[in-house]
Length: 221
Image (cartoon, rainbow, N blue to C red; front, side):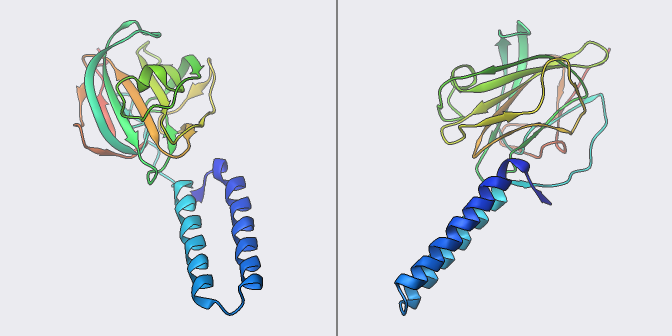
């Protein structure tokens, strides 16, 4: 288990601030041990909560061109047919994964291929489960193309609390199944747009782990 690079600076300054706060209060409120202990306990709890948010566990990297793996830790909140109108321009099966603040927030590539399309969209910050969040919120859209020409879209969506999407890819980059392509801070959603003939392996309310939980089996014929 390691700490994600997106959290290292924040955690350093947070530790510095909390240590300075507690030291200063001990100087000002000498003798008020109950209050000082409560502040110390609150500081430790707050720091641990933020620390766990930026955890970056090591996973066994998958390598199966027939399977689509979850791009995010969280819970499946949507499985439905939808018209993808940004790039694919065809009907697809949309799977949406909601990431709560207690989930790992590393986003991993569901398949191996080349980034055929990538675009960042500024936008609103509706709650992640809002029906319009996938088209109106701040988001990124990435289309990965396998060697056989099959294309898959993955969309990172910011939520009401998550207001910073990080991404580490651009058009033309190779991406490998299970490897990190982005990160979203403090709760959000990730959508995957599957071909209609994909065999679903999950249901609504199932829990997922990025790079570990298979979402669907692809028809490679």
